[in-house]
Image (cartoon, rainbow, N blue to C red):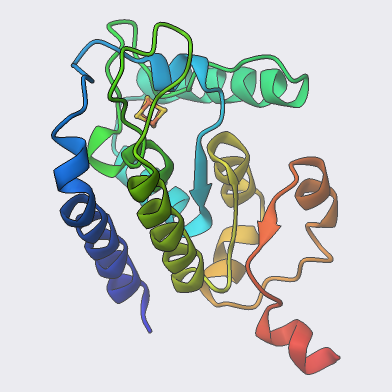
Length: 198
Ligand code: SF4
């Protein structure tokens, strides 16, 4: 399956999730300006495919904004590694998501039927189950990639040699062992090259 088709299927899975949880989500009390999920949860998961979509989305942004985001991502990675609650690197000063149109699934599945007030979101059990199913589908779709915290995934995608090999489906986990272990990334499956070598 080519990359374009995979990206199309990512969007389809997002839409399917919204359709399936619509009866529950209508009860959400979330409103613009509340960014509790982006500040207090401290864990934004993404697959490499979702990371790629985000990197392509921000590609043409002005240098100053990119510089700011890169600084935020660096801080976010350090905070996360030091187990400090990390504000999302894409949240702007007005508490708006800068990548809302392409935010990863872990953000899309979060809503709350009660004001979070720093206590965490209250989500319907049925919606959590639908979310787990969609998450698995997203990982299956990105079979040659991996998943983990967003700022770690973006770092991996920026690593020399990773992105091109990933796009060809032949990157070696051995070459990126350090980063995979340090960031506790989940490798979706062994790549075809590794399978051939076994
Ligand atoms: S990507 Fe956007 S919605 Fe998701 S945590 Fe970051 S700012 Fe919030």
